[in-house]
Length: 283
Ligand code: HXC
Image (tube, rainbow, N blue to C red; front, side, top):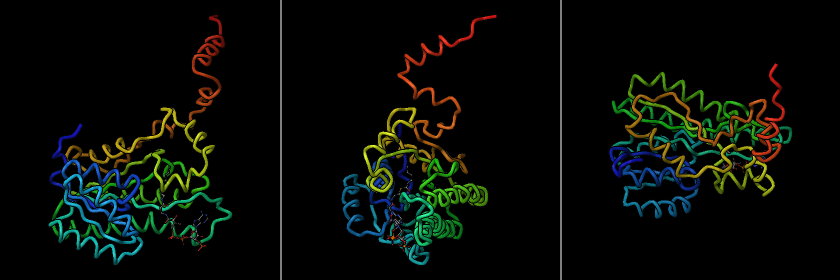
């Protein structure tokens, strides 16, 4: 699908890049020639990820930071620009989330998720955007949101609010910063198993079975599928795409269709036969 040099003119920061989907994207970018920086809160996790990423022979940097800290994010962007020579890509992937009935949520619980997801994305985007604008360079921002940014979602209300905000930020800045040659897009992943998300959001095998039943494609997503989509959006293969949110979810978001429940009633062959029998006779 891509050449080994698809991203050879790119230097990209992936926030929360030491694990989960962030790591998978960082690895794919590195395999395709990009200089890649990953940031996160945990230095051991960063070092372990960096040593795996180094196997690609790419230029890899790590930076310990909490994306909630505006000043510290500014220092990070400055350092990466200095070490790479330039920075032309940012993937806002760092997130925080947990399952909680909203009536049991503390104000600080709400705040911590919104701080990481919405303020964290703003902090990185604001510093990166200002650097690009001031230096006259063009660049590319990709925000990882979720399918429920549009629909809302029970039991993860702070995350739904924050991701909806990030979607609004993407579309607002895609317009506002197009004049500077800055593209801003989003990806809305459905269920892609990762340790971080799964331990918090799918804590039981029964949850997982029920979750799987919601997906028309009949399986969870594979990281490489999402990583390749991210490559496309971060590369020069999509220069006219901006302000877009691409969903990648095996059709899970389409649950709302009124008669979709029929698919759940019986194996497909039985459903087809039943529907044929129900067909009204021609008048
Ligand atoms: C209720 C909880 C809670 C829980 C934390 N809190 N976990 N409340 N139920 N399960 C509350 C705490 O009690 C505290 O409030 C407040 O949240 C902050 O918690 P801390 O642990 O002090 O905060 P912090 O160390 O900053 O950690 C932030 C975090 C944590 C969001 C709570 O889970 C985290 O660091 N997550 C990062 C990784 C992550 O979440 N990955 C999954 C992303 S998946 P009080 O009032 O007690 O002080 C994702 C994809 C969505 O977003 C799509 C999936 C399909």
